[in-house]
Length: 170
Image (cartoon, rainbow, N blue to C red; front, side, top):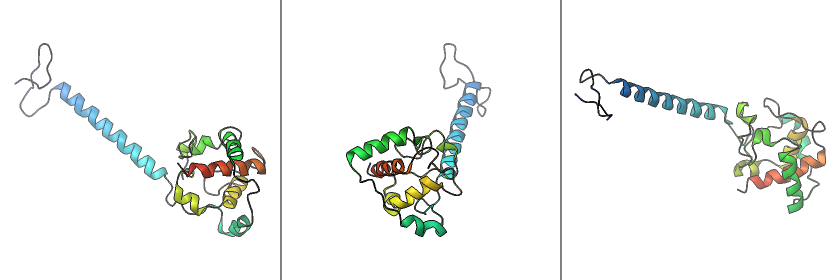
């Protein structure tokens, strides 16, 4: 009986029930692809945030954080400055990704995953003052470390926040 795969000489299946070597290799490759896809999906789901709307400012510090006000008015200039800081000195993109999709090269290994700034619901739920508090103090239980004053100053943080707000509009 001839194999369904054609070659110059053709080849025969050993019996009607068994498969030739080329079919075994194809089936093994299909299994490998399926397993790789499952591992990718499981990793993505497990690394994703369980509740993206949950505040990351600790309950005991939330009232203090709410007292802050963004002194840098959002404008095309301040947003552009925030983008440059986000992508360079602030190093935000390394975890949050260039477009705020939580897909930066370092963020892929963090559990929970970094915040996804593209989430419009999250953008509505979190205030500028909460974001500032996290940038200044870090976020307990996550990979987010304090960036003020080690990497940026307070004014730079407010510029970054103005830029981050634009990521939820896309």
